[in-house]
Amino acid sequence: MLCLSASLLLGSCADSCEGSIETLVLYAKPGPKAVGRSIYVNVVNKPDLGIKQSLMYEGKEFGTFENVVIINDPTNRFASNRTICFSKFRQEAATTGGDLMEEGLPVITVE
Image: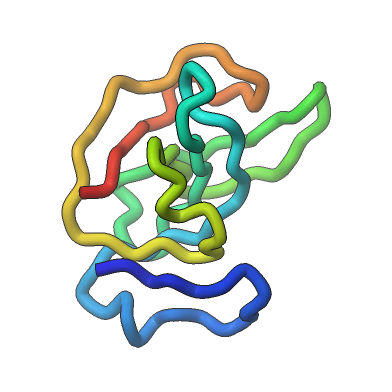
């Protein structure tokens, strides 16, 4: 199940996320090898999925978040979402390096 909120909507999609994992989009950047996007999210209701992380960009702190995960989005399916809801996902290899200092962040692909 997906929460397809338009980027201009300010409301939450809590009703459609009921029973699913809910995440709030923090940041997105081009995906690995410029395919799709890597979407940095803070997990709202499954804290064991993400890790606490201070995200950095160009040497400045972007923010510190409690449950950060990177969603691999090779088809730009979530390009305009502020919230992403899902039930099924695959765990990918953790990140290494990168311009947001994301060393060790969990990476998932939503099914």
